[in-house]
Amino acid sequence: MASPLNILFAVSEAVPYAKTGGLADVAFSLTHAIKEYGHEIRMILPKYGMIRDRQYTLRDVIRLRDLEVPLGDQKVLVNVKSAFYPGSKIQVYFVDYPPYFGRPGLYVDPKTGKDYEDNAERFALFCHTAFAVLERLHWYPDVIHCNDWQTALIPPLLKEVYGKEGPLAKTKTLLTVHNFAYQGVFPKEKFRYTGLPAHFAEEDGAAAYYGKISYLKAGLEYADVITTVSPTYARQAQEDPEIGAGMQEILRRRAQDFYGILNGVDYSTWDPSSDKEIPVNYTFRSIDRKMENKKFLLEFCNMPFEPEIPFVGTISRLVVQKGFDILLEALPVILEKDLRYIILGVGDKEIEKKLKSLQQRFPEKLFVHIGFDERLAHLIEAGCDLFLMPSRYEPCGLNQLYSLRYGTIPIVRGTGGLLDTVVDVDENPQKGTGFVFKKYDAKELVQTVERALKWYQDRASWRKLVVRAMKQDFSWKNSAKEYIRLYQQLAKMK
Ligand code: ADP
Image (tube, rainbow, N blue to C red; front, side):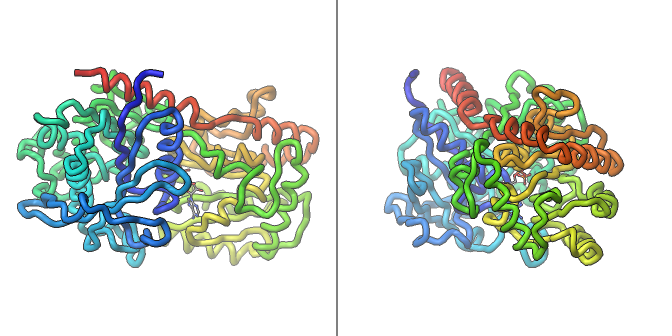
């Protein structure tokens, strides 16, 4: 192996500490996969209110106490604690600044459902603190791997402030965008918190964005390498204004440095053969035992156990991106069919309300659980026959990958990572693993559900389909190697 690299992984959420979506899974599993290849990777994360010192054995680090971190024209004192990832030797630094991070929400106030008004300050402080930590530790990584807008000030700060000269001058940055729709856009008045030179906010400046500023844009301009989480989404983000969300031009300009690397699955957490959260473990050799989980899940939904009736599941943030407009339109038709359906999600209040009222209309068929519930998510993967993911766009998507491994056949809209990971079984009977519809349209969604239900009736073919799905391998092995190749390429750059 080439010599081990030093990587700082800067991220705003990570399993098991804090999670709102797939980013938290990726942060956990990608860092572990990279560590397994023998590299030194450490993580930096905000210490939110739900991260308890005792639960995760967070320790004070004398050297990381009272770091003086710039915030606008002031300096604030920040403590950074540290812990090892449970069961591994990955060091995690927690940025402990209670006025900003000691809250119940990560980015959104759970009381109002709105973004915190000081997100610009919060994540500017987080980015600056990352540099303060490196300087105090005298640890100068080869690469800082940044994720999304929350850490996107790191690349410009490195080039313009912290790494202009001195020990960080050789450090490079890689920015992974998990969703181009979230861009860290703030009013211009907030620019002063970034600590970047004034030209960034001027017309045509790297952070200037339609009269406002965007952290993501500045990051895309300054990162040495940009990645996103699937090849198809990478292509769409350059071509389709809805998906690139205003960043297409930069991405096209930087196409030489822009890569789509598919996310992987952490099969130590998401595999029915060893999943600790589900009542009965099973493999593709013992699929009949999956039925026990179905029974359990139906009981949870107060529904009678009728093994032959197909059970459909959805686990999702309740946002338009995930296809809830066409799903809400299609549901009254879908629920007329002979099936059961469970939806787990939290998010947009309007969507929550509409789902709840549909549940009242179809109480025997639809069960809606509003909330974030990791355990129930595992049970749905294990207990359902089908998993529906009608996304309007999807950077990668993890649930369809989990579903494949659990033999819960995915029905997906063919976009982004969904298109890269699910093969339509009618189009390709030898290799098919699920059902894919192309047009973003309620009618097509209903027709595809009908197609799946028809397949489900043919028990022998269905079983073969389930076995094939369960045998798919989307582990991190290959994707982590691609990241390492990029790190190595960066480390060699002058
Ligand atoms: P995104 O990151 O856009 O939300 P992904 O499919 O990449 O979508 O990842 C979503 C992750 O969040 C999955 O691990 C999924 O199980 C989880 N998840 C989403 N909503 C919930 C919820 N309400 N309860 C439990 N887990 C959830």
